[in-house]
Image (cartoon, rainbow, N blue to C red):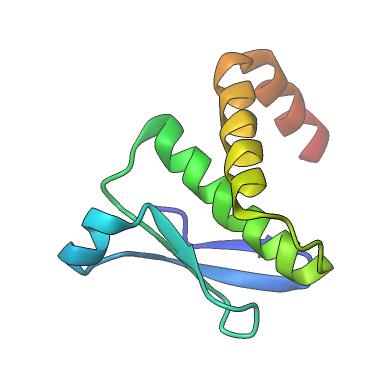
Amino acid sequence: MLKKVKVGPVTYQIKPIVDEEQKKKLHGSISPAWRQTIWINPDLKGEDAVDTMFHEILHSVDELMRLKLHHDKIYYIAEALAKVLKENKDLRIWIDEQLT
């Protein structure tokens, strides 16, 4: 599992949701920026895992930039980004080339 992700000036620790009841309810969760933790359901795989990570990162961007996005907008943007990356291998390769 990914260990950390930097969003703007904040580095979030990525931790698995371990409580079985929480795992049934949540895909992911994020603490306020000052607590610097994102929890991800470790049972998620593939596009669901990527979608959830984008979702929590977008919550962070929303908080840090004070965008006041509605939760449904965050949901749809994260889902769309995950799908774009899944369906465009050349884009993933190009992004990696540009950022390394």
